[in-house]
Image (cartoon, rainbow, N blue to C red; front, side, top):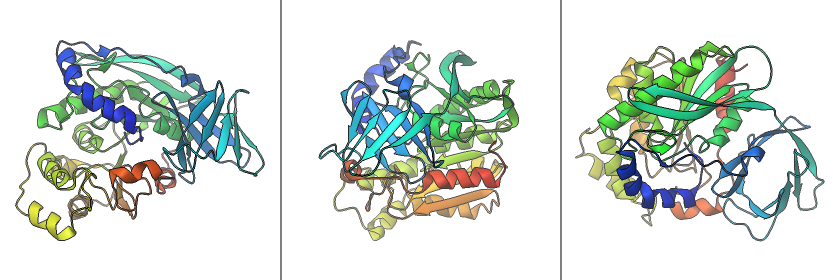
Length: 388
């Protein structure tokens, strides 16, 4: 899922070979370890109706305004008291504080009056489900209140993510009235099986099977409307969602963020040119086109699954993505003539859909906001009457 957590990502890259060796034995590396900050994790509504998210991110919290997209990684000088600086990972000079000691959220920014928000009540329930011999563990987060809710299963990207990894999106969807199922990826946390980072055809198929099993569990709940259940995820999740939804009649919609529509081999060739955003200056469009002109589809190719999709899908891309070649992915999707597909390409955004002018890795710490991802999701769901 596309929640910036760069430090955790780098740690995962170091641990991945160890994780693979352990999970190959059917064990999960380390087991699920909930953050002590998890009780503060949630969506908070202000008096003006705006909603902000506090989501577990490494050893701290990520604060995100779910309307404007503003985000900051918070520092914690004392219990219940957090500070933030002028940009995502720039903590000094301090530009504001967030206090959670009262059970809600009090935001102070410069000389502006303090604003208070109330934590939206939810129920969290641990769940277990199976896909063949693999046992997956996760949680269902449901907004308080009676009746049947729309439901969404969150799908991981290539990261070794646990059930809390995408809590920014758990908070977004629960604030819209959704029941949300998030789970430890196979081989991660408490889930058994083999964690594989690469999007091989076999791995995409395995992960899609996990997603279908999650859909079955969520759709069968008494507090979920099975006619309004779908999938959401980012990056590698785009392939997994295509494979899962093409074969899963339980999926009625999908939201894909920075998800490639080209094959895994083509995507790897593009990322090799750009270094995933580390090559400075970035390669020119002419060089990219010249190199990719000789690359044929290989590995998992989603085109066949995409042709089979009959559900509405929202695709969100950053025009400066250095991991997914957006012009080719958009060309593939538009060439399918799927009236149910909606594409949005945001200028001045990279793979994480943050306001990074060139999509470079070094620009991420100084980003200040997401591009209008959250209003786009909210409006698209409402237009299709999927939200509560």
